[in-house]
Length: 249
Length: 249
DNA sequence: CGTTAAATGTCGTCA
DNA sequence: TGACGACGTTTAACG
Image (cartoon, rainbow over all chains, first blue to last red; front, side):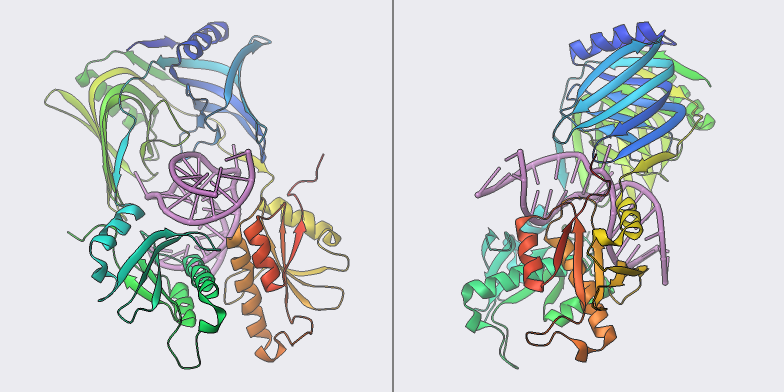
C-alpha cells in the first residue's frame, strides 16, 4: 500500500500527481479552491469556494462541500477523468456517455492532494433489508396470517413480479407486497396493480362479487402505514400486516 | 484558509488532529486501513480494507471505497463525531438519534489525514428541474395542448397538491402531472389519484358517462413514458404530452 | 415532528 | 441496453 501526499502543490505539480494516480488506479482526494460546472441530464454552476474533490479509479467523481451527505456535484462510475493545466490553472474534467454528461472542476488553488492504492474488502454484509423480511416470512408464513401458504416468490405477472404469491386457509389466492419500512400510498398502488393483474389472469369472471369474498386478496406487509395509505388499503379491501424485517429484540 | 496535513501519523497523533479539526469545524479526510460497522435502520459489517473517511463539520460522515458513487457506509448531517484511541487503535464513532444510528470506524492503520477550514459558495445554480418544466408550460400553455389554460399550480386536493390545474378548450377541468424525465407506471398512479380526488370534489355525479367525455382529464407531461406506463395511461383515458424540461437545442 | 414527492437520485437484476 | 423496483435512499417543502 502506497500513499502519495503533497501539500500546497503548484498546479503543474498537481497535474503530474493526478496523471500518475490515474495511471496507478489510485483513489484520489484533492482539497482546493475551485469552481464547478456540470452539463448533462440537467446543468449547474457553482461559484468559487473550498471543496473536496474525490476521484475514483472506477470513474466516479465527487465534489463535496462542508455540508450534506450528498456531493454538491458528481459523476457516476464509468466516467473518464482527465486533467490539464490551462492558463496556469488546473482543470479536471470527467465525462461519460449515455447520457452525455460532463463535470468540470476549475481550480484557483490546490491546498492538498492525496492518492492511495486501495486494497482490501469491498463486500458489505448488510442485514435488515427487504430480502430479510421475505426470508422471515417464508420460514414462518403464519406471521402473515394463520393458514397462509406461500407458493412462489417473484411470481411474474403482466404488472411485473410480485413479492410473494400464495393462498390463504380458504385456498383464496393471495398477493403479498413487502416493505421494509413504513409506507405511503404508492405501495398500495403497487399492490393493487399486482392484484388486478392476477385477477385478470385468473379470469375476469372471478372478480369480486357483490358482497362476496374477493377473487384475489392483497396483503401489505410493512412495519406500519401512513394514514393515507391506510385509507387506500381500506378502499381496495386489502389487509395490512405489521411486521419488521428483523424480529424485535 | 488553513490546511492541516499529516502523513503516516500515529493513532494518537491522528486523534489529536481529529479533535482539533472538530474544534475548528474543518472538513476532514482520512485515508487508512479500517473495518466499519453500522447499526440503525439496518445493520452492516465491512471487513478490513483501505478506505477514505470524510468527516464534515455539519455531522455528515462518509466512508468511501475505490468504487461507486455512493459511500459504502455513512452517517447523515446532524450526527455527532467522536474519536478515541482504544488498545492503541484509533476509533471514530458517529451517532445520531431519531432514528438511533451508530457508525463505527476502527482503524488498523492511518495513512494520511487532511483537514481544511472551508470558505466560499455552497449555493448551486441548477437548471433543468421539474420547476423549469412548469415555468416553460406556464409561459406557453399551448405546449400542452391548443386552448389549454392553466388556472392554478400546486392546487391542493385530498390526494395532495397537483402540479398544474387548468381547463381545456371545452372548459373541461384538466390535471397536469409534470415529470422531468421518462416515467414508469408510478407516475400514472399519482396522476390517477389527483384526477379521482378532483372528480370526487366536483361531485360524483360528474363522473365519466358511458361514451361521454370525462368530467376531469388527466395529462402527463414528460419527455417519454415506458410501455407499461403507456398501457396504464390508455386504461385510464389519460393523455401523454412529450416535452423536455428545457427546449431542445 | 410526520407526510409527501423530487432527484443529474444510485444501484442491482432481469429480460 | 432498457425497464423496473429497492434503498440504511437523501433532500426539500409543507402541515
